[in-house]
Image 1 (cartoon, rainbow over the protein chains, first blue to last red):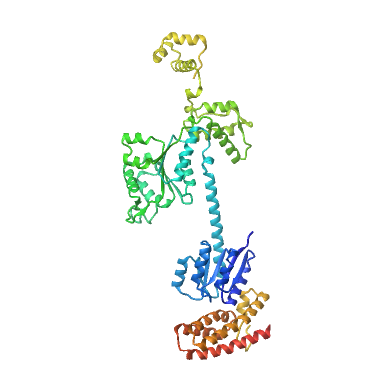
Image 2 (image 1 turned 45 degrees about the horizontal axis):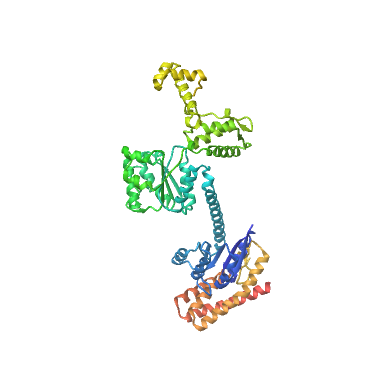
Length: 450
Length: 115
């Protein structure tokens, strides 16, 4: 491991030696002692991790040294050690960017020791955080998150790319389970805002009467039970991204408030007067057709236009063709790895079965389905019998079957015959066809049931 | 611990160094090297009536005096520092300085004899 390099800048030789001796007791520290500012700055190429700086140096003021050190490395922690107990000096040094201020006395070495220990903990945490951020970034690289090669999904990639490079409001629509939240995260973590927070608010998850304080925070005493000031999600997001999920469910009263905030670009906490600027980017999502909601009078038209921004409409899984298999294989591999199982494959009959299913629950449903199949399969290969569709949903989408026109006729007539207890007369009436047509089809080939 | 007739007391310093004899010897060496320079600068500043330098040198000597347990000088070195900063007349500082010169010389001699 690289040693933790400490510079001690101290014109009192004895005192400097004391500190050096003391800090060198930790084998992880490499301590350098300099007697003035110039000597310290000359050795900056050694890249110290921390500098302990005596404030009164013979050649230049402590302030000057701090400025030069921070010019070189703005992140460098400089701990000022001074003989003067002067609060105003301490404050001005801290303002200038010093990490800490320690007064010279018998306890200095211990305090310095503790300060360095805390500093190292903080640096380790910081490093961890930045690693985690990178990890999150990698995880949300959109080709990693959103799998698929279908033209429908490629068009989505293009739109995400446009959303990433600008600050435009994005409105994501799509059926349940199409991955609206993933798209929102992909936009955030690939944009210049990625180092700021991503804050999600699910409008349906919060009772109507609480949503305003949840979004904008409140001041102490704003209402019964408001015992302390609380910051809201808009404030928490800072320069990051706010993701408003299920935005169509917002009541009209709250819609008016949101509209105002978006127009003014600022808001106040509930019960407060202070205006706080909105700096976050807004992404909204809904599984409803907002334009329809506007027509029905459930959604404000002016807010609709504010929120529309760049619309991204996620395609249902059933229109994504082969993506179903790409996703299925991806989920199976992921699931097996997580559960310490050998990765299973899909038999061709299982693949066919998946391709024929309409997936009303979209990707979310597919994921649950293939995970269950991976558990149920007794062998390395998942067969079609391992795949079970959630009962009531199982309605084969006709068009996915790819049939001849006559084939479709058979399917339809078979379905009706079954439904009406094989009453040919009734079926003929329902379908508005002649009974003979039904008999002809029955004669040439027994009807399959849909 | 303090031998009779000695102005300094290494007990505290030794404790601070966790009883490390080598480190103590090193500190004594540094003290013997750096203290005469500071005392000389102190006297020069006094002769030249340079309050600023006088204060700074006294400030510098303060921690050495404390570390080496020279209790007798603890108060006077602080007094010199404070008076210099306040710009008090040099005449008032003279007796303090002459006492300081005497004690430091004796400490240096004792330390060198011990070494």
